[in-house]
Length: 160
Ligand code: IDP
Ligand code: MG
Image (tube, rainbow, N blue to C red):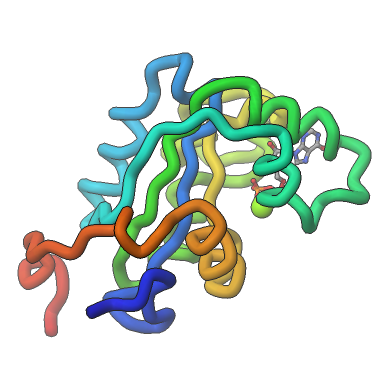
């Protein structure tokens, strides 16, 4: 059985992806899931929840000294979030590539942020920035019983 936090460096690497309240309210859930799904990554955990301010502060604890921290936590806890765990080879780094640069004004067209949003304070999606933060974030948001293993079409996605 794959550990909850995945196995970095293998096909079983996992990352934490969250569609932020603006993404959910703008009806972009399907669009975003579609992009990860068609790439070949495997969705192993998904739920919708309204984060508390405390959960937002814990999730973004590394940014607590930033001037935008309070606004960021208000934003992240302002509505429903779709929290997900995605699995696949290189999913942490490639997930960040699919998402695009933090500031949508600098995100390349073709990326999620480059195509779908305009401002850094409303950039619709979160993705873990390293395998270590993926481990911490998956553990923060998901229990073992909330992640499912299934066969999928992975034999057609990987050479071996
Ligand atoms: P990331 O989401 O691309 O990993 P981080 O630097 O981890 O970017 O910042 C977390 C979130 O904080 C960003 O996604 C964005 O919503 C918000 N943020 C980052 N920089 C700024 C800023 O300069 N002003 C307002 N919000 C910001
Ligand atoms: Mg970040």
